[in-house]
Length: 341
Ligand code: KG4
Ligand code: ZN
Image 1 (cartoon, protein in one colour):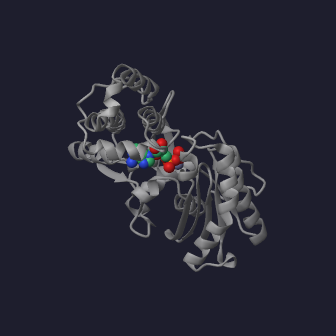
Image 2: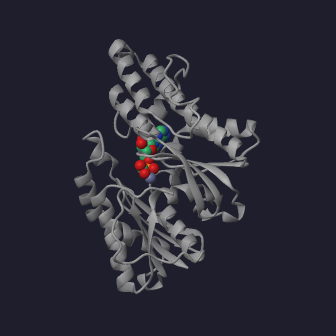
Image 3: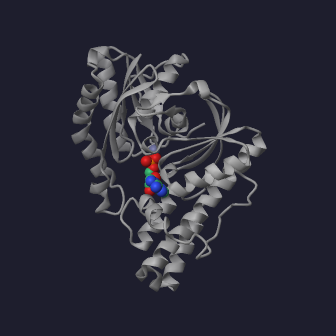
């Protein structure tokens, strides 16, 4: 089965071609530079950029895969959650393509696609569902932090989520307070590499809390007060690296501890992680250490599949069709606030 997949939920325009569990092409046009000037994603600009870039990106993906429209068996797109106008571009283009080609359309939940992305490996990536195990899955994207129990393929339930800021938001907002460029996560990761994570003591919110929920806005506020009270830290390269390492350590400790605790409580032997923040090297290392200690198998999404991409959308759409879950109407609307369940 050959699928053409579109992803336009935020600031990456991406189109992929997936065939029988293999990614034949995945083209991503990132708008990061455009939004960096404004210190964050500007929704209207994002939608206009998607409109400008979608067809060249789609042409590029089809050419790279050596696939023509006539050879496409189904068309998929992110239906939600995401920025409304950004979602509209990819969803309506995909539905129009499916309508014109007389092929099924599949609307995909963006976080469900992140959720199953750790089951894609290799370069180019291919599905590895033969290795599937029941797992506890951490999804850490820009706006969401979710802990999910995956019982079997496509059967999952959300255990907890953030009650305010997501971990990605905490990275981005503290980076902004420090004066780093958008998106702040990769910048903090880079500066933290040679910093001391124990230099400054920041709170570990909800670490000992009985629920699987997260909260990161208090941590962001404590960074704000810290900078107000110690402005000289920003002027000193070493102390700046220490600050980044200390904030990162607080975020990572909470994410890892709550994930491992949930795995132990539920009694699964596998942990997975996905979404943009899973690019973070400290998080990857800390999860690896904790899973080794707890005799748990760890599946981390490959770094190029952590940030937004259409390959994961196409892969999940193919699995859904294979499992007989059927398509979505070509008239279906975007679902900007769609919650994972
Ligand atoms: O999954 P994603 O690409 O987009 C959404 O679906 O939201 O995640 C983007 C988030 C941003 O908050 C970005 O700062 C963060 O992922 N991120 C990182 C790193 N790379 C991306 N955070 C920490 N360390 C990184 N290396
Ligand atoms: Zn995402």
